[in-house]
Image (cartoon, rainbow, N blue to C red):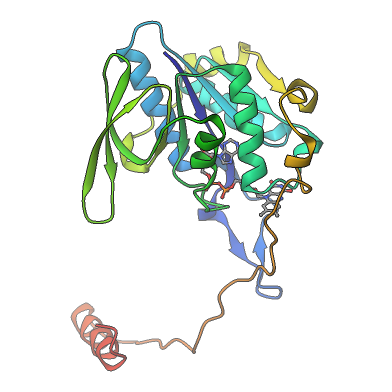
Length: 263
Ligand SMILES: Cc1cc2nc3c(=O)[nH]c(=O)nc-3n(C[C@H](O)[C@H](O)[C@H](O)COP(=O)(O)OP(=O)(O)OC[C@H]3O[C@@H](n4cnc5c(N)ncnc54)[C@H](O)[C@@H]3O)c2cc1C
């Protein structure tokens, strides 16, 4: 089975701070990580590879050249090969253009099963995975928490608001992974050495130009308009309760929540 995992390099939001003067995110010097849901996808893909002889796991990322770092990390976890989709023509792409480009690349790479994360922690739209499936005309299951492989299908447990869905889905298909799907393994020293020796395949605009309409990519191909971007203002001054024991503090907080009809 040819398994693809789409991974996005994102800023580590635990490290993001707000500039008090401009109220905007301070991005300089922020470490980047593989989007957490995508790491669960990598782990699930590696686990499936172990269960299905002859399977391979390819990681794919669209981004600037530094996204190679994320791909190297995935290779160090044990993925077989990596593809970086990168080109200035792709800059300014919204989710629709992003998924159009990734889907075009996946058609060229080939796939039986595609994982994306449910949601990226920076863009946060949860649109790219389902859109890729639509472009490719394959079934998709989102919020996947458990996977059981069968001959030409998978049985998956899908997390839903107040229940679970157990679904049988035919291959090829796309699954969006949530954190509960799998606990990602750590990189190994052997994996890091192996990853260093592996070549990352680059797919630029030229490599995809026969399957991509230039009107559907980059800023030109992005119907989304960002009207305004802002951080939430605090509605009122906070209160600091001092000199209370833990129990007294809990009582005081509960009293205030009751006063405000919040509990
Ligand atoms: C008008 C507009 C212009 C933009 N211009 C730029 C720009 O110039 N530069 C820029 O960096 N961003 C830009 N963006 C942001 C960009 O569209 C998003 O980062 C991207 O589409 C992913 O959306 P998301 O973060 O909401 O991912 P989600 O839909 O939340 O991601 C779900 C999953 O899809 C997969 N996925 C998402 N993105 C990628 C990727 N790049 N590679 C591989 N897998 C992926 C991952 O598995 C991820 O977990 C722009 C957005 C808009 C609206």
